[in-house]
Amino acid sequence: MTERPRPHLAVVGAGPAGLAATLAAARHGVRVTLIDAAPEAGGQFYRQPAAGLKALRPQAPHHHRPGWLRLRDGLDRELEAGHVVHLRDRHVWFVERRPEGFTVHALLGPEQERPQEVRADAVLLATGGYEKVLPFPGWTLPGVVTAGGAQAMLKGGLVLPGRTAVVAGTGPLLLPVATGLAAAGARVAALVESAGPRAFVRRSPALATRPAKLAEGARYAGQLLRHRVRTLVHHTVVEAHGDRRLEAVTVAALDAEGRVRPGTRRRLDCDTLAVGHGMLPHTDLAQGLGCRVDGVAVHVDDEQRTDVPGVWAAGEATGVGGADLALAEGHIAGRSAAARLSGSQPDPRDWARAAGTRAGLRRFFAAVDEACAPPAHWAEQVTDDTVVCRCEEVPAGAVRRAVTELGAGDVRTVKLLTRAGMGWCQGRMCGPAVAGLTGCPETAGSRPFARPVPLGVLARAGGDDESRSERRSGQQSEHQ
Ligand SMILES: Cc1cc2nc3c(=O)[nH]c(=O)nc-3n(C[C@H](O)[C@H](O)[C@H](O)COP(=O)(O)OP(=O)(O)OC[C@H]3O[C@@H](n4cnc5c(N)ncnc54)[C@H](O)[C@@H]3O)c2cc1C
Image (cartoon, rainbow, N blue to C red; front, side):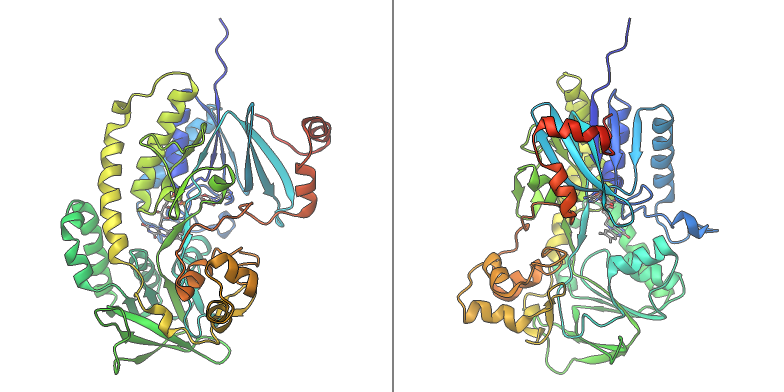
């Protein structure tokens, strides 16, 4: 008797969520194509040193190595069994829904210029999130990097961004960044967190539900003490100074309303400022498919299904909550997809443990997210000449004038009037800043494509089925 062919799932993103989903689906009868822009699996949390660096101790800058090894070994087994194909260095720019299934459009090559298509019965989006950074005078100076960027240099490139660092902003990511830089030999002059202790105390019932997470926080606090890192809570960076590059930052205490307290400014010498104000989900591919987005995150049901049939989403694309939550959501999504693609009704008891973890961590991180909101009056520190949109070099004054003098009432009109958000990153970086400066609500920006696409690729991707199939004979295309 011939075996029924396995249904085919395309998973976009090989971070914790995508890996957990891939393993769960592959172990339950699905053929998976795992597609990721990075050269190695792992995503942000399990980012590995570049292979060419031949790291002697690749584990040194990493946390949770046993968890990573379990995922990596599991992936290797499924690759060997032929249940999974891992496509690296593929930047997915669009997922197309067609009557017979889905076509994932990706670009590969150093210039992301070579197109590749993957066709599948269903799609699982595990594209993670990216850092939010709010502007302040001097934030465009060389030496100012995002907190995650500093960590990526260390984890992926095994280099320090500088000798003396200040780590600033808000959110739990600052802890591994500050301790990681200090452990790797940088002098961390200060960890500047804008949230105050009261914000956490007020949310202690929700926070106390995850003692393991609190213990993790305590371990980081111990490491900060050991490395003599000064921690300034309820403080913010108000300015970065330097002539050609960063030389120092001014920090100040905040009052209960989130305003800078007069007379508290102090200057800290440093050559690196690693700054981040939280995380935002990647929603472009989901929006391109027409999936519902709630606020800034992809909406999913208890099985991690979006409201578009055949499309699942997991991990930080559906809301920011750390690697353990991403793993739990990925597992549930993979199990659900496997059951539904094989035509059976999923049984939630199959993932009861993961669902418990998911519920607990969502509650915990909702409380952390509220506690770690950027200071309410951060925009007051942004001088009119501070560049807000770096791609198009639009200063804060122009953004403000678009509202006060030209009558713009939403971010889109501000963009049309000023070009803020019209450049290479399509407002991913400056979107929250423009919203904050103008008082407009922060929403997931709607972009037709997740990545910049060469016009030639776009032209070839259009057209009807007949011309497509003619082209396919000549074009590099993957149909699995
Ligand atoms: C810069 C950064 C640093 C972080 N550091 C820490 C840390 O030290 N400790 C901690 O607890 N948490 C950290 N986090 C949070 C942590 O990354 C997440 O909790 C966890 O990794 C989320 O897992 P995920 O699978 O949802 O997404 P990710 O780990 O972000 O994985 C998403 C994957 O999708 C791929 N991808 C995205 N879009 C596309 C596309 N269009 N085409 C192809 N591939 C795509 C990416 O290359 C990536 O590999 C960090 C987050 C960021 C953004």
